[in-house]
Length: 223
Image 1: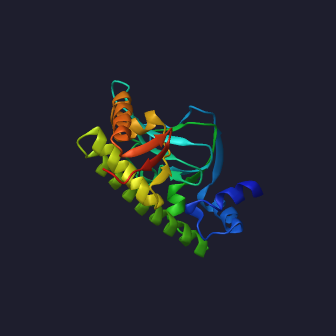
Image 2: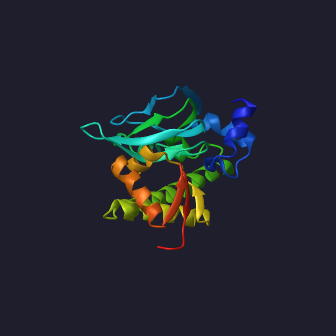
Image 3: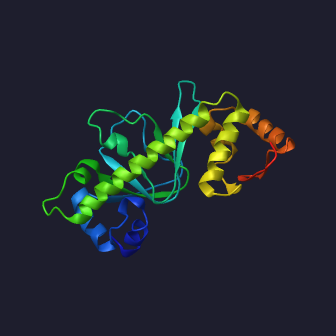
């Protein structure tokens, strides 16, 4: 693996407290393989099984669910340094329920999940650290999904928007922030219709709840 690749991977949460030299040593243990995908590729298709997790090195991915009629719901966006596919790579029988799609050209490191979870013969401490990091990421992911369920459980589009925007403000410890979604992605994420959501955002601004420009938002004091 090239030094540039190791430098990028060092900043990923999955390799927290693991040096570049140790990452290089791990690649043999976990059968690490870097692959490239052009924009709009299906990286992991729904309905198929996977035995590897992915670490996004460059680009942007989206996990999306498509129903029988072709309607798309955004489950999550994946940024460089984040992992995906871990829950299903750990399962012997359960296929991927959603597509993982590249929104841009991407470079991805794939690692065999069984090899990750099995201590190597050397029982090296950094392999144990890798497993600890994976557990911490899974815990964070569970909290993320719980927050999404909380937003989607609200009855009206306004309540869903307020729940989501309030949560992002708390995460940023600021009433001014940038969200990772464009309008269509936000509508898909909250499972609402885009035009109705855009109209509701305009009403919320008129009511003095928010100010916004594209994906930059400010929550106002008066409600």
